Length: 253
Image 1: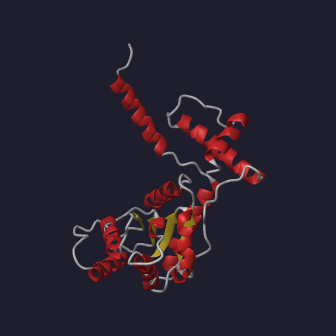
Image 2: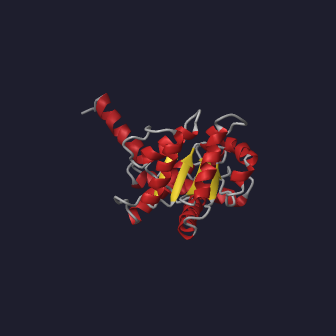
Image 3: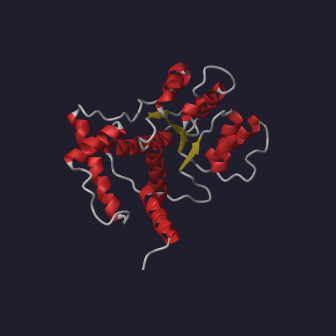
């Protein structure tokens, strides 16, 4: 008996959802996990003193956001959220950000019932109070390329983030595309508060080490597709000819 289009679509939706949950233990992503863990430990040791930030820039599709989400899931599995403890929060910046919008996004992530209530100074005080109350060790700020402006009020957002580091309440990981590099290079005060970059560069087909990394990732992905039931069997993605084509169309990302 043939299936209806609705039944087929339901199966497709389930498989896409399973695919989106796959996390391949790709060495650069594992290294990013380790750096995020270091940032949390630095926060504990430097609590009340100026904190560090970490820059993570990569082309779209490099897995930086997925890696951050998987790190948060890992942390909350081992140290679950409680009424007075939220170890890590993550916000996604929007275009045309302002300092007030930044505070609102953070308060929303903390579950504040009235995140828009009050002026910018009041919101900032409430944000700092939340970091202290919930003993939050790490703030992950995604899409920081939206802050790539030369002048105007939007620059205040980078100063506000720098100010959060200076208050000593939280470490910050900055995620974004390569477009954000100019912003970091211009804001020397913020740049001076950052640890060495943990950027995810595209792999090069000319480097043997990068070829090995890419082949390992593809092999793990192929197995994960089968193990999660997205596909019924291995697809042979690490076949030499297929691998070369995948490397070319992905641009090493």
